[in-house]
Image (cartoon, rainbow, N blue to C red; front, side, top):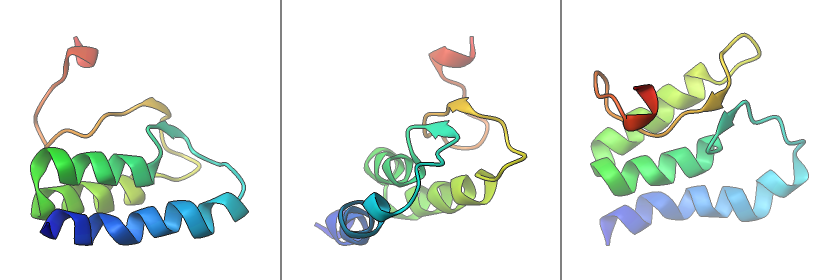
Length: 80
């Protein structure tokens, strides 16, 4: 229930604001979808931290491509 309260503003952004902005996503999933996945996967605290960290990394000089949510130091099957 509490997770839904943290996800609700992200969903509102996706429905109300994002459609009016140019698509400039450098990563897959998008930052908003990344934050939702991180909250669902790691809980509210870690998910919000990961979402903020992703927003800070999303800039014109950053890498691009597939970047699934994972806690610091974790590796996924994609890395190997």
